[in-house]
Image 1 (cartoon, rainbow, N blue to C red):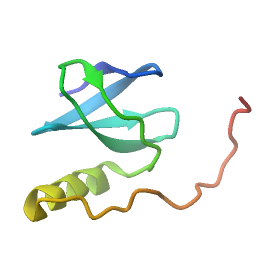
Image 2 (tube, helix red, strand yellow):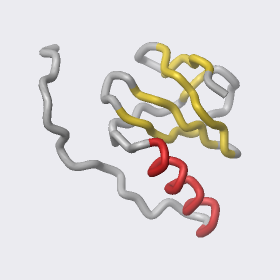
Image 3 (cartoon, one colour):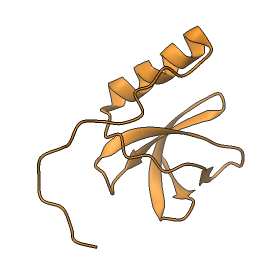
Image 4 (tube, rainbow, N blue to C red):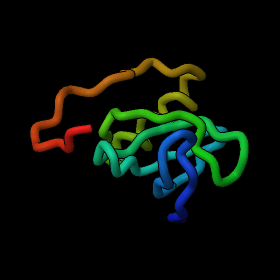
Amino acid sequence: MQEEWELRGYDRCRVVALMGPTVIYYNHFESGFNLSPWHQYGYIERYQSLQYGLEQAVQRQLAIIDTGHDTGPWGSPPMPGEYRKS
């Protein structure tokens, strides 16, 4: 599955997986994969900037399913590189 969904308040992002109430999407603004709840097909509810690799994002969601709660992390280390000025 790869579809573009609307990321509320931003732009469209590429969705790569639906795992229950969670969508895994590629955030091209931050160059990484993130997790978000979804309630309406086609809309990503929450912006995240964790910059996970795809395997890390899937493993995090599997851990959430396994334990019944999200243990984090809720942030990622700084990523080197050049960034656009706002």
